Image (cartoon, rainbow, N blue to C red):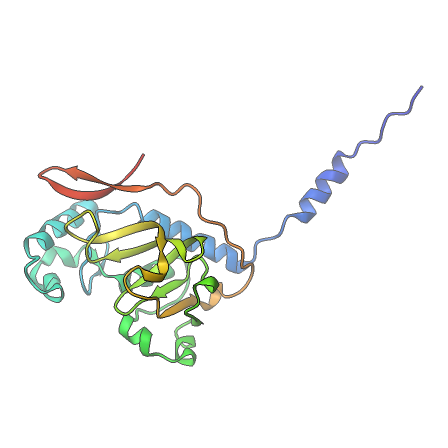
Length: 236
C-alpha cells in the first residue's frame, strides 16, 4: 500500500504568515490619519471660512454656506465676522490640516501657511514637523504640501507628480462657495502654484516608504441642488 503524501498545510501556512510584514507604528498612525481624512472628505457641506476653525452639524454648515454666498462681495477675511453662524461651522486650509493631524493622535499646533514658509527646518522640528524639501518623488500619503498661500494633505500618489489630495478650498471649481474637497489624480506640482515645501509629522517619518493609493474613494461630481446652487456631492 502506497504511503500517503505528507501534509504540507501547516508548513505552508506557517511560511506564509512569517512572510507577511508587520506594520510599523508609523504605518498604523498613517493609516488612521488617512481614514480620518477620508471621512472628512464626505463632508462637502462644510464651507471655507478664512480664520474658521469649527466644523459643526450640517444645518449650521448649510446656513454658513448661504451666509458666505450672500456676503461674497466682502473681502474673504471679513466674512467670518459678518456671519455669526460661520463661527459654528467654517474652516480654512491651515486649521483643517491641524484638525486632521490632531484627531489622528499626532500632536501638531495650529500654524498659518506664511509662518510655515518662513520657519527653518530646525524650528519646524519644535512643532513635530520634518522638512522633506520640495522633491515630489519623496512625498508620501499623509504629508502636507505647502504652497505660497495654501496647504493640502496628500492622500495617495498615482504616478509621477500625480496624486489624490484633500484640502479646504476658497472656491470649488463647480461651486460658488468653497469648502472641503477631495481632488483625484491631480497634477500636484501645479495645483495652485508650485509646492514650496513638503512637511511630514515626525511620527510618520519612519517605516515603509511604499504606500499604495487608498482604495474605495468615491468620486466627487457636481450636482445642482435646490435653487440652482451647484455643490459637490459624493457618488454612490
